[in-house]
Length: 332
Image 1 (tube, rainbow, N blue to C red):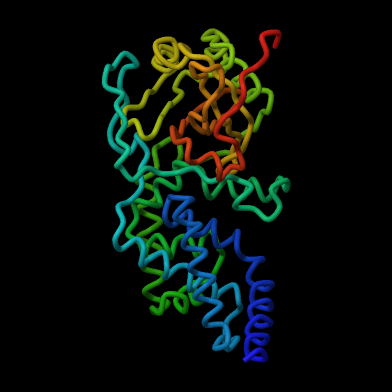
Image 2: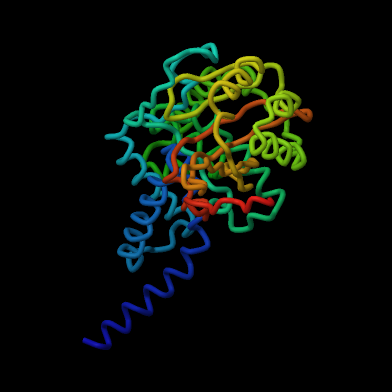
């Protein structure tokens, strides 16, 4: 009995060492498939458990990476069969005026989630890795993935992001190469029409850390004029789980004057989907600051072009962030 247990432990140790190097890649793949970081974490765990159980039967006819992607993709396809597609507010309709009175939450809707950059990368300080992640996980693109039928989505991600050949993808999905090529062609056409015009051709963003610092300072000081200097004229502002969203500098500034800047805030820098982000905290009556939302900030040519504020304090632990901050001393 003890000998069998020792063998099992040794086998698990060998498998864990081999599979661990693919964990973040699998997590990124599942996140793109599902649009939910929390669900992706659960399915990667399920993938690794299934792979460990099947590892004694792994015959090496494909690489371990291919075999793990096969399991992960099929786990995702099973999950998607009973799940609604995840969305951003801009996927529900056009923008509204900032003075619109109905900014109620729709917590039951399947909202798209951000993903902590560090959770998806083995080397989160590698500029090339961050740029590649940004190109394949920007929010508009992940939202567009969700529009695709599940198998088209899988084929597109396996070929164009994971860089498997059509023949390898045919093996992963147990279909013919002809079927893979057909699914890929349809997916490419659909993704092009699902993306907003401004997102179809995306130049590498000039990530200006000073711009993010100024955004943080404007928010903490409640300075509408400072915020105005940072926003592009056609900036977009979304706040899931609030279904309403704003387009244009004037509407965004009016929203901040009416609502956002009526309370004190503190912020901590972080990163989501390869982009700069801020974890925003709102002051409470006791003087502390409580987790409010993750602000993902996209920029181009020295201006902020899109802000998506994920109003979900439950996201903060995934980013390694506390849900409460102490108040600042009076002299601060």
